[in-house]
Structures are given as C-alpha cells and as structure tokens.
Length: 162
Picture 1 (cartoon, rainbow, N blue to C red):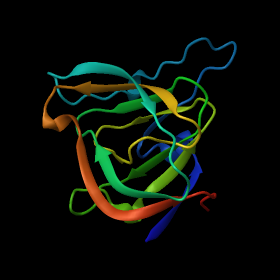
Picture 2: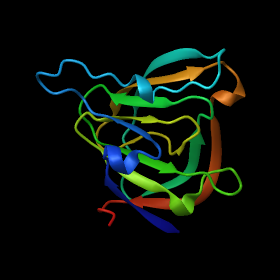
Picture 3: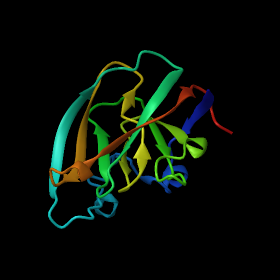
Picture 4: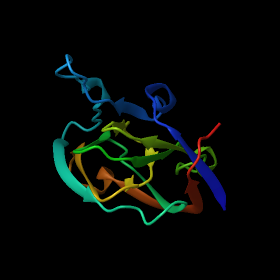
C-alpha cells in the first residue's frame, strides 16, 4: 500500500487543484474569493450548507474513495480553528483519479479551501475534535452534482513531504 505524506497547505502548492482561503487579518476586514467559485452549468443554483465532520480515528488514515464535482467548485471553510486534511489527485488515463500522483496537504489556523470544478479529492477529514464547516458549491439536483469512486487503498501519514 502506498504511503502519502501530507505537506503544508500553501496557495502555490495547491494552485493546480484550486484556491486556499486564508482568513483576513486585523485591518483587512474582508477578502473576496469570487474567482475561486466555478459553475459550469447555467441551470445550477448556489448551495450553502453547514456540515459537522467527525474526527478521523487516527493517522495513518487509509483512503479508499475519492470524489469530484465535475461542474462545480466546492469550498470548505471551517467555522472555528481546526486542522484538516486536503487530499487531491489529478485525472488519470482512465478518467478517474491518478492516485500515483495524489497529494495531501494539512490545512490549519482557520484556513479553508476551494476545490476547482472537476478536481478529485478525498472526503473531508478532520484531525482534532469534530469540526463544523460552511460548504459552498453549485447544484442542479442531478447525478452530475458529485461522483464517488473507489480507489486502490493508500495511506495518508504524518510527516512533511520533501
């Protein structure tokens, strides 16, 4: 089984998969992320939800599934400071996720992410106590809203990726 080390989440390291949503600092009352929001279906509506995610049992974590939203970006913004894993993969030759080139990032300090439309990602995984998130995406109520696929299991382990 392949081990995937997680690395710090930065705008540069994550750029191929979407955007990093860094909270504003004092003196910067609002930050706009409108360019991060993507919708490829005219009939889709904006969807804002709140989700509570249970803590992962422990690291290493064995990943067995990936998902994508082919026509919509998807944003996760923690409602309180927490740490969570951001696991992404490019498209493989078969059209599913290319797990051999997957990457794992650690989001901390209230930072959120927006997965670009059609980005393969692991379901949201928190590392501390259960955490609540605001989730933003576009939906039209069809099967095209989301795809889940089983993948060859791989492990996500603590440690800085070189």
